Image (cartoon, rainbow, N blue to C red; front, side):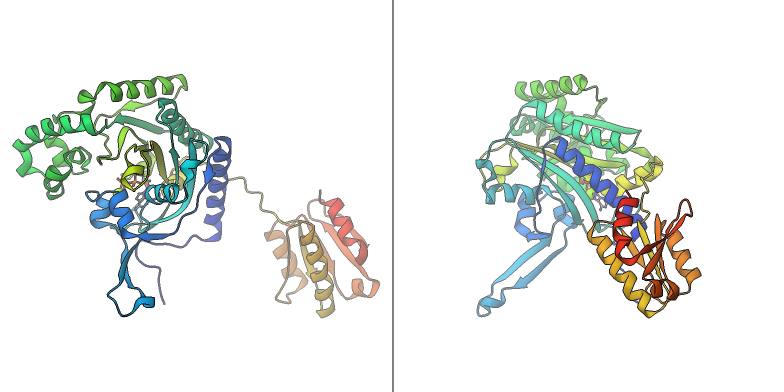
Amino acid sequence: MINTPRGTYDILPEEAKKWQLLENTLRKWCKRYQIQEIRTPIFEYTDLFQRGVGETTDIVQKEMFTFSIKNKENSDKDDIKSFTLRPEGTASTVRAFINNKLYGQPQPTKLFYMGPMFRYERPQAGRNRQFSQFGIEVFGSDHPSIDAEVISFANHIFKDLGIKNVRLEINSVGCPTCRQQHKEIMMNKLAEVREELCTDCDNRFERNPLRILDCKNEACKQLTQDAPLLSDHLCSDCDEHFKSVQKYLLALEIPFHINPRLVRGLDYYTQTAFEFMEDSIGAMSTICGGGRYNGLVEQLGGQDTPGIGFAIGLERLLLALDNNKTTIEDDYGIDVYAIALGEEAHVAVLKMIDQLREHGLDCEKDFLNRSMKAQMKAANRLKAKHTIIVGEAELADNKAIIRNMETSEQQAISFDGVVNYLLGGSK
Ligand code: ATP
Ligand code: MG
C-alpha cells in the first residue's frame, strides 16, 4: 500500500464540504470588497522566492521544495534551471503584477489567491508540508485607510464564520531609514547576550537582527526582553502612519493590541505588520499574518509601488471553526432518487434522470441492480425529496410511481409527464 507523503493528507468528501463552505464565504467577502482572483503557477523559478520572501527567512533557509531540471531542448549545454514549489503567495502575485503590467490599470489593484502552498517543515498539529492559504494583496496605495480596510476584511471573515476569540495584534516595522538607526542600537545592546542566543539568532545577528525579536525559542525571548523596540525609533512619517491606522481601526471598532515585538524583518516590509490569533487551536495559534511591503515590487524588478496583504492558513482556520462549533448548512439532500427493477426499467429511469439533471435537479439512481428495499434505503440515505419507482407493472403501463418522501404520498404519472411533474413538484 502506498501512503500520502509525510506532511500531506487527503480531504475526504465530508471534510471537503467544509472546505467548500469556507471557500464560498471567502469569495463572498472578496466580492463585497471588490477583490479579484488571481491564479499563478504552483511552481516558479527559485530566484523569485529567494528575492521575494528573503534570503534570511526560515522559508528560504530551510523550508523550500526545490528541484532542478535540465533544459531538454538545449541538451548540449549545461542549461539547468532551479524551480521551487510555491511556499507562499505574495512573491508570485507581485511577479504577476509586474509581468502583466497590472500597474497600468486604475489603482489600487486588489487581488486574492487561494490554493496549496508547500514548505518542508516538521509536520505537527497545524503544520503540514502541503497546506492551503487564502491571501489578498493590495497594490498602489500607501494611505493608512487601506491598511485598516485590509485588516477589517479579515476581521469580517472571522466574524462571519463565527470565530469568536480571535485576537488582533499590530505593530509598525518602520521603513529602511528608521530601521537602520534601530539596527545599530539593537546590535550594541544584543552584543552582550549574543553568545547565549540560539544558532538561528546568532546568524540573524549580522544579517537581520530585527528577526531576533521574532524567535520562538523561550531562552531567546528571555534574553531579548529588554531589547530596544523599533516602535520607539520610528521616523515621523512612519509614526504618523501607524497612529492613523490605529485611528481607522478604532473608528471601525476593531479591537487590537499593539505588540512591539511583532516583526516581519525584511528590508521590503514596511510600517504595518499584523497577526490574528486564535488560542483554541493550540501552539500554532496564528491563523492570519500580514503587513505592508512598500519595497517589494521594486525589489522584484517593478516600479516603486506600495503594497499590503495577508495570508490565512486555511487548515488552522478550519480547526478554529470546529472548535467554535460553527456548523455548516447541511442541505445536501438530493431532489430525486430513481428506483428501477429490471433491465428495461433501468433504461427508462436513466432517461428520466438525465432530463431532470438537464433541468437542474440533483438526481441519483441505483447502479448495482439491487433489491427494491436496498434502493429505498439508498434514497433515504441521500435524503431524496422524491423517488421515481419503475418496476415491471409500471413499465407495462408506461407509468412511473412518484413518491414524495416527506409526506409518503404516491402518484402514478405517465413516463412523458414525469419530468414536468417533478419540475413543478420539487419547487
Ligand atoms: P508560523 O510562525 O506558524 O510558522 P509563518 O510566519 O511561517 O507561521 P506565514 O508565512 O505568515 O506563516 O503564513 C501565514 C499563515 O499560513 C500562518 O499564519 C499559518 O496559519 C499558515 N501556515 C504557515 N505555514 C504553515 C504550515 N506549514 N502548515 C499549515 N499552515 C501554515
Ligand atoms: Mg513558518
